[in-house]
Image 1: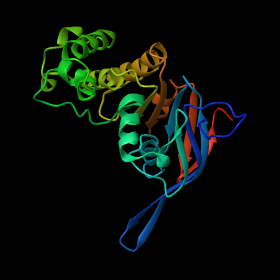
Image 2: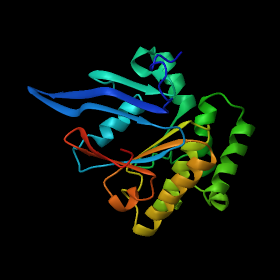
Image 3: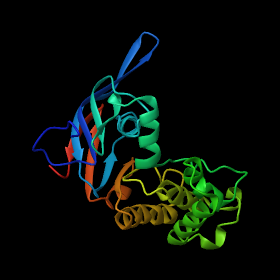
Image 4: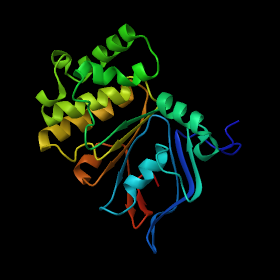
Length: 236
């Protein structure tokens, strides 16, 4: 039993009355204010809002990077604050993939090695990890760049490589934090299309944080945040 409540529809991601406070000296900032929402398995959801609206904090809570001050966060039936550090690390390694605004590709590794890294850290055999990385690079249109170093790629290519890396271990939940923030319009459109298409192809639930309403239009569901609260939800 997940403990989420008998008779309730299963959710890939669930926030139950979640709040998050940050202390800056004597100042207390309420970044997320009593958010309750469910994201269904396989759904492509965009969370939009201005800077400071709480959207990135909400994503960090979903990733287990931050811990809620109040309430509960559930990922694939697991309540994150109930997990030990080791169990949380294992859940994140197996279940969650993250794409960031800044690509975080390691400069000393080839593109293929960067994509394979999550598998190698999970002790998958090197040949198997590299083969899976090559397959993902083909899916994102970077097969010819597999042996290149990251600095030789364009911004759009680096983000596509980052998407491949986030998916290589077949996560059930793919989180994307401003994935088009550093890209031009054409590259941004390609990355958003990839997130939707690859998420569906690989059976992943995709949650994307963005300030761009244009980018959010690609999602099936759009949630808007303001001052830490959900103020609009197209699924409602």
